[in-house]
Amino acid sequence: MDTPTGAPDQDWSAGSPPLSRFIQRQAQWLRGFDLRRPWVWDVLVTLFWTAAALIDAAGGWRHNAHDLDVPVRLVVATSLALSLPLLWRRRHPMTVMAVMAAAALVGYGSGAFLQAANLQMIAVYNIALRKPLKALVWPLLLAVPPLVVGTVRFPTGSWDQLIVPAMWAYTLVALLGIAVRSRRDYTAALVERARRLEVERDQQARLAAAAERNRIARDMHDIIGHNLSVITGLADGGSYAAARNPERAAQALTAIGTTSRQALDELRRVLGVLRSAGDDATTAERAPQPNLADLDGLVERVRAAGLPVTLDAHDVPDPPRLSAGRQLTVYRVVQEALTNTLKHARGAARSAHVALLYGEDDLEVRVTDTGSTTAAAPGSGRGQGLTGMRERTALYDGTLDAGPLPGGGWQVRLTLALEDSPS
Image (cartoon, rainbow, N blue to C red; front, top):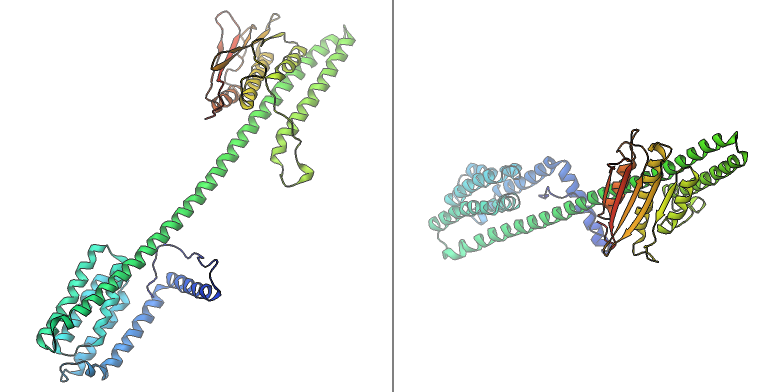
């Protein structure tokens, strides 16, 4: 057996009859054994054909011989020269063919006409299996001289009866090697394609997991950052009012509790996606994502934290001409911009203004604050705030600009197309 060294063993027997599956499994086992220990098979094949050649040299060669006076030593030496080179047929098939062709030339020229000369077909098969197609020209040419010499020296019939059948046999063996090689290459290509598809599938899974982690990180940053900023503002206002107006302090504490519960609910929803979907006991609660209708509640919470905010969204159609994903992006960008204003804007007269401006094909959102920018500017790029806003905007091929205003303050400007065509 000359096992191709291309594709690994595959189980192609699914759906086959039991006998076919048994034969295929045994063939796969033999191919696997040959791949692991090729020298064992090479030695067994060589010993088998060498024994057959020597048995023929012991006397059987006389049935086909045209000269019975050929020395037995020459017959034995020629038989060994036609069989022993098979040990190297896989590594050096061209050299093996040359040696065997020379031995066949001696056999035909002496009149022995040994049957071991047919072992040249094994060399031709290995050349067709392992070498380029153009390499087949030389073994076929090497097989012709012994036949011609035998036909010329011992003419017992027409040349076409002696040469043509042998050449047809060599040609068919070469075609068999080409067919096996084509099947091997095709199988190897299928296996390689399956391997690449598995790699691509794993890469897609990793990319999807990374994208989901980034989404969760953005949501957690927006939720925690905003709500903690609101709670901080309420706590500062409550501690200031505790000594002067206990009623206002109680209102601040109530607002802190409400904001905390809202933050916990949103965190449970976000973290629920990390739990096992098959465990009914830990399935996260379903809740709609924030949209443009929730901007009023967002503004009210920020106002309660001590930042005067105005919302200009009178020209927003009802329902909004914006997909749910784009509405969530607008909400999170406004939330992050107001959170940054709470954390970074300074001055007693600080305030913020949110404006939604609809155009024919896009929506422009402007979040402007009037606080001093001597401290760390909102969205200055430190941390995850501006990065998260840009990532959300990029999902829908939008643009986001953030920077200080000439007269003081800071502005975040978001532009999104109305059509839902995420990149």
